[in-house]
Image (tube, rainbow, N blue to C red):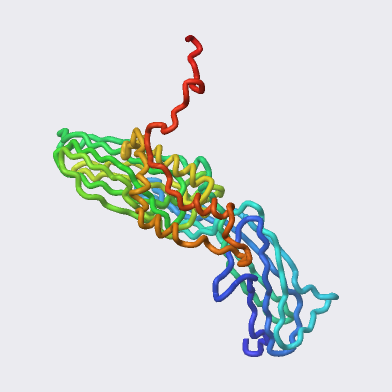
Length: 407
């Protein structure tokens, strides 16, 4: 407006730095300020704040009711997950308040529910969170501003269910013009079910081509968006990462011993929402000429909390070792190798030089290194260990040897 005294009106969240907005999760407190800048003194009625989180889905389907009748069916559903209202500038009396020219700030804060849905934007639905401020003034249209904020619900992959290996096997008869061209079999396995963006999925697979034509193995990470409204469902699938192997000739067998497939930056899995789900899967398929492809699907969960370096890491390493043994890709030695001889590692010259070097200085320079105690330490440190031998150099005597109870 030409004579509007409001120069700036915006919502600012605490924690925003250099254009990077904060990210929240369930149970946290959202705090910020409503900024108002006036070019001159203005009369203000109320300043209201509303925070809202909403999951919404909508799609249409065309249906036919005969040869000449067609209509469009619409499906829509909405769920409120966050709803907060507050009045930041109430009038002291029933009359409007006069604010002077300049910069004004009105702080606010509210707590999010403990369980929330991750922010999401899809083809037929979305999960959005926003804060809207409304400034009411006498004889002037209300001024509104809004601020969108992001919520990410943690998904920890350090759980037994998500650390368990996933495997499967399929086979299909290759046919051409109703003739049997042979059997193609596929088996695949991954070391766990849960991953985070940026991680690499090592794929272990076996492709056995018993047909008379070459086949092409491929693998892909597929995102499936499921929208639900009024008892109906609508799905949208998209490939987020893929790889292609080398062709497998007729009568040949090929092994994938950990083919790497990196997960790109994608949103986490969404399960706990009444109107939409977001899931992932690893699809390993074999393209067979003249026949529909052989497809094997393994479930995946994309999380936000990566694999811990300690604790669950050790169990994951152990399960990974057993996973490789079960898959037949690596065999542990039956008998461990003997340790190397000390002379093979440290030469006599190094021992002589080390014996001539002084003991490291202590923090207190007044303490002397002379005396039996330090001489014992020095002797112990530089004395070479005995040679390795499978025979005991000090066998027990007849008196100390245990006797058989039946003798």
